Length: 134
Image (cartoon, rainbow, N blue to C red):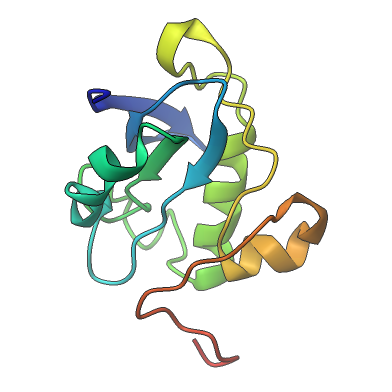
């Protein structure tokens, strides 16, 4: 079993915390939590998948161990949060296991998927908002 690593990276001037496990050369699986929650919700799932996937489970801005910028500094909207996560996985500053770059080329998340459909292999939604208002 691959151990879970706990890391942080700066995105847009604040800290994004994430959990990471699995072989860096395996297919990437980005686990995005819902509201109100954090990547901690995947603590039991990550070890079950880490033998087959390179798992990345960030805490969204304002949740879990990621920074919670004041509302005057950060607009807490689905679009803005999706933008931060988009920049999170594209950031060259993220260094996963063995010092390799994260290289998530096919992230998940409905808003990220609509921005970059060519990067998506599959979407797994658990209690997620799959309607326009959400």
